[in-house]
Length: 456
Ligand SMILES: *Cc1c(COP(=O)(O)O)cnc(C)c1O
Image (cartoon, rainbow, N blue to C red; front, side):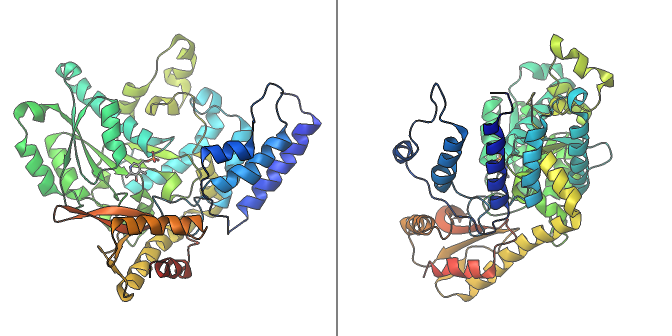
């Protein structure tokens, strides 16, 4: 199985041919899920004692399984947070896998880690965090958030040994991403999600802090604000919130997993003022920095602090973790063995230059504004709120929640588009509405017009 034989050579050619075809195809099939029973039937037994052969397995993947998976980079995939990895990034993902580099320790992965760090310097520079701030690539925003809050709690406990046995408390808002609550659960901390109208402001935070009992106030180890809510693209009052966090001496984490890309967009960069005061920031390059899955990033104002919390100690690792060993990504997040998931981003940034990134990100924001204007001028739909970043929430006049879900399935099943509903809160009431999230710069105005026409 580890020999280079004729089957491996032939398969390599087939795989590369497929990869080239896919990466140069600007119009991939959207894909629609079949049931597990249907896939069992169509694909048959694939794991057998003697193997079914590479050619067969690949055929099953290409002809059966692929069609049952959504191409998230389809230009009319505007659901959830879509993706649009650059061709260069995808190609370099293949190279990354082929290169077999261990990305945890400089001792083994120096060259690759150096390249990842070049890409990281660019991300850090966008935040405006002071000299010394740095970060690492993670598997996504969820693990970046987890790594950041573990560091925050570690710093809080380091400051006062009494905190060792105190259950921590996080303050965030109802606009925070689900992963924030989920990761608070993972570390067994309490969390307060302050109710807002979508945007978490200094006034909300001030009111929440003063409502706490002295015991609870002493348990607060982190404030988490969002730099672009996933649902509506709303940027919290980062400046106001950060000033309170500074005054109170509480760790501020800013979750910009989705919105972080907009730090590179001059038209909206001012909305992030205050992010430079954060203690940690999450950005997901696999969202708005056009990196293939999976690639998140966590950045720390004081990486040394995160390192004290995250470094794993083991006899067999000592030779790699010593002081003189160089930059070890394993020391700054929860994962030990890791692929060099920042390498595709590095290659793509190096190839294209950062200006092209700015243009592609600005295009997403522009598409949201264009969609907003089309919605305003069409009789059957109306905006729920002004587009923010690349998110657009709108309603189809007269529709009930079930109308939105059958519309989603109709468009998805026909292979035309994947656009999903969400809920929007106004005056304490939740309403089902439609949502666009633009990432792919190849989405066209005609695509938007066509999708709106499916709601007539
Ligand atoms: C997407 C998102 C996350 C979760 O990131 P994953 O990469 O899916 O783990 C966290 N926070 C925000 C604001 C997000 O948009």
